[in-house]
Image (tube, rainbow, N blue to C red; front, side):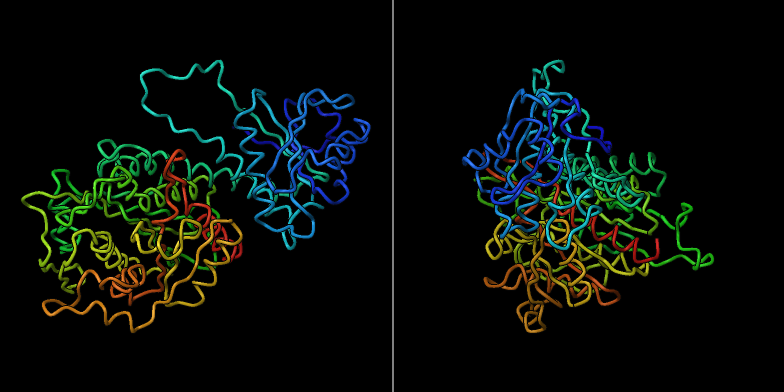
Length: 511
């Protein structure tokens, strides 16, 4: 899907589909008003008669309006003006994205009116969000079916033009491109997560990272079992020992400050990088603590944290952000076998701390803790780990926000705002010292679970024991990384949040 920005009168523009977002209880925005006048008030007539629902995101598709050059006009409800907010605006443009993805028209036009933006939002914000939302709705997973869809009859606009009422500045053009880039990262993350676990193996994740590094010229190293043994990654290897597939530890390093856009005030010194750590369990059977069979197929999504880090690197590279970012992905399966870890085993992590494994299905924290220790060598500005860590987080928060846990208030505030700005929201859970008591073990420095209660918190409390050298935040995406049921598939979250965070960090450095 190709995006362009144009200044034109919408009623005169020849296009397959013209999308207009309007309130159901207020005068039409100026550009929509011009279209209405050209068709002799038919738009306002449909709205006043109740043809367009007041629910934000409702649509009314009109064909062949006299006086309007567009073949189709899509009226999209922004809801009532008195309750207008970010969510209503996003619901409306999500509906636009769905319509563009399903239209027989080969090109579409979207009117972005500054008088119809949520309170406190500007055109730069709107272009980044619409660029991502509309490009994301064009995503289709290329499933390996015996019969492929005929490309000549494929629906969906190939070209989308954003109509503005005034000439855009460089920031607005950049924002649209950033939105597209984040959507491209989401598409890659979804592709990886939607693959079967027999295809998306630790080696597949490593190959994808290597291919990205070659394409965008950033550094990628792949550590194998022998390398991990030398480093003392006993916690990670304890999970890997039950599988016939070899584990991989992926290290990606993007040096944005060296690409001609970096902060020249460093005068040769390397700025401290942001480190992203993604949980890469390519299939989670639970190990000896075997999961129930129902919906176990969805455990192919247990590498969604890893997929989001790989997707983030694609987005960063496309945007050419002038920041340094390191991506760390511990990748393995968690399988039951005669070699698998048992409940009661004690393992030594890379940090030297020992862990009593009480439940082999609490394996994500075991691979992450060694990655968090490895992160120290980069002297990071901050570390964010992304993991489908606990079902307890889904119980606590449902599938709307991701869980956020950190002891750094400033980082929590920053990520929470990034979530609000992107619509990819998080909710902070407490990480008080008292929760550490639940991880006590008679036989090691700590246990890998903390009992029945507060599982999302004790999982993060466990990880926090390996993060004392830097600022750190944990994102539990167990409830947000994929959808079940008829809509089953990866969501690409939390790429919108991460994209907003990284763009913000790049701007904070004066670019």
